[in-house]
Image (tube, rainbow, N blue to C red; front, top):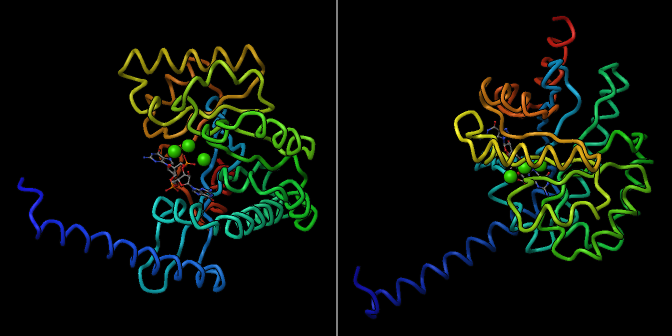
Length: 278
Ligand code: C2E
Ligand code: CA
Ligand code: CA
Ligand code: CA
């Protein structure tokens, strides 16, 4: 590849320029989307691997753009984080997830726990615990039916994180560490953390049925979780074999396409109904 010519330089600059225009367009589209309620949630069931019963669901946000169609979170969450727009979006997600969970409870669908992804930026908001309390009061969802999922990156600033997590758990809300095993020095600090659940990252689940190293990592995570009294759930289960091996290793809960993709409200209700009659 030839580099360093004047043309390449111009081309490079143009690309950067296009990128920043694209970003600004996306950012203004995002502000409109918030106002016009173009976001919605899908719900992926969480399953007891032994009994096959549904124990809860993870809420996953989608953007339904009038021209572009459905945009996955991978395309807009980091922009929302960089611009601070994750604060109003995240608040709406928490409210809508809690409201929906309460509606399902009132309809007689079991008392399912709703898991909601919360970004580091939201935790940094000094009002976060207060907002959480308000949302629970407004939606009348009992706090023990809400779990927040945090990625390990949250624990970079460990001191600050511990005190906010203590506040959250004092409210009665559960805390889960998402993508567990992918960050740094996870095992050495988890015993100090006020958390309830470790969520084994999909990368270890993917080849657990064929790869001894992945299996050994899963085994170690489950062993540690058991010895300090944490629950364990595995994500990204796509095959029966993966579910079987996880179960053999002592993992009690899981989620993934093998059980169900994330579902819109009606489809989730149908999934629940089918489970109740069979
Ligand atoms: P995550 O929290 O790790 O969510 C799991 C992702 O894996 C979801 O992608 C889910 O649809 C997908 N998934 C579930 N089961 C399987 C499976 O068996 N195989 C495969 N290949 N994938 C599976 P999604 O919905 O595109 O979300 C991607 C990421 O975006 C999430 O990763 C999370 O980090 C973020 N995200 C999604 N919704 C929210 C939200 O409401 N708030 C925040 N802050 N972040 C969110
Ligand atoms: Ca998650
Ligand atoms: Ca995850
Ligand atoms: Ca992930």
